[in-house]
Image (tube, rainbow, N blue to C red):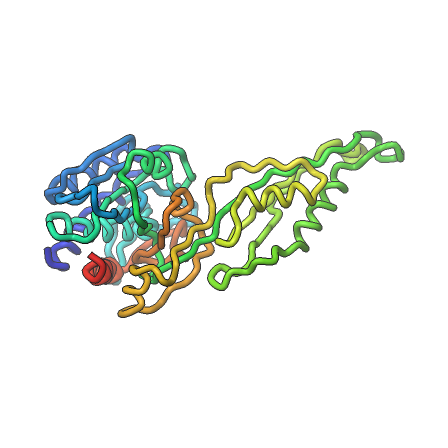
Length: 353
């Protein structure tokens, strides 16, 4: 299929998706929309929960498989919108609408890539397309669920807005609740242990500590205390103080490793909300990365988190659009970004397939 045809069909799909609210956990109708589109394109497609997936027509279990993944859920529109977030509007070379950039553009370009190679019989790799739910809320019923029923995967491409630059590493996310405990009492007396002061000691340690392993792609591990809560009266010393730590982890550490080290060096009781969002990485010597460098060259490390985090295979993140537009008011993607995305994906995969 030629690029102009694929671009036209991709644009139609993206406009249809924008019209349908698809907040995380509420993606039933966008899943059906994608399912119908793939059927119309001649693909033997499957659906599990709100996840839509397919394998290439000549799938061969003896060959390695590449996963092509993006998500069709969105965040809720913020109050800054001046346009209807569910009306796809084309103006000045841009397509406006909620989810147009994150991750509608990457989704329709990956779907176009899959369709382009779907009926080829002599591929070196199988292709698995998975357009999944619940990415924005790191839910349990999206890719984290679907990966348990997909065929084995050699490596993965995650469709997110990266300006078609290849992110070969991505920071992981670890969110920790800290609970400092003390002895409550009247603020005028000395027979108390102030939980707030204990929390401050731990917070200062977290603020000043730097992990020794610094990644050339992702830099250092970044820890930020983002919330704190204690006390309800001016004259009562609080017996408990709760604080939240946001940790962005480079590929040189595992989330559990970071958590255990923090617990050993703080007096508060720590609880991790999840360990599953680990950092992701693919070697710069991997054949797909080396192929990309022969005609594009640009790779980088991404500070933002995606569905890469739930995979335990090499992966990279790439797609049309700009991450800075994600979750913004009057979200948009340039029309030429979509077409160029399809062209570059096909150019890359022609080299490796």
